[in-house]
Amino acid sequence: MDGRCTCGDVRYRLKARPLFVHCCHCRWCQRETGSAFVMNALIEADNVELLTGEPEVIDTPSASGNGQKVSRCPVCKVALWSVYSGAGPKFRFVRVGTLEDPDACPPEIHIFTESKQPWVVLPEGVPAVPQFYRRDEYWPAESLRRRDAVLAEP
Image (cartoon, rainbow, N blue to C red):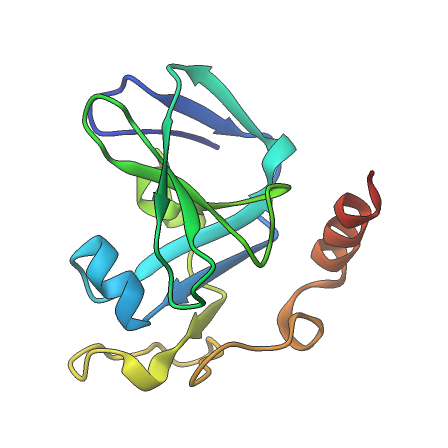
């Protein structure tokens, strides 16, 4: 799957399917995006290949207090992905809306729904949790194996 910023200065490719796709309804994501939620495709950093350009990394506050590093196009400033302190630099949370075909990555879970906008209607058949969740309860076995493999690397 290929993606890019709005102006096209930064282009990237996902070399594998995402591990899992979150639709986050927390107030921090609402503020950051200026929208009702953010769609993040979690993937190993090594599976994100830069094709053109070089994103600038912006240290941004987060609800955890540990911050996140948001990679943005240096020209149009569109956020392409984040690195959260909890997941660490071996993983990226790619903004699904920057993919050429965002329809290929529908949400696999809705998180922090306790703060979702009241007019947002969640689809039936997709898990939704008030805050966060336990990976082993929702992630496919293959995604858990891929995650464990990355975490086992030095």
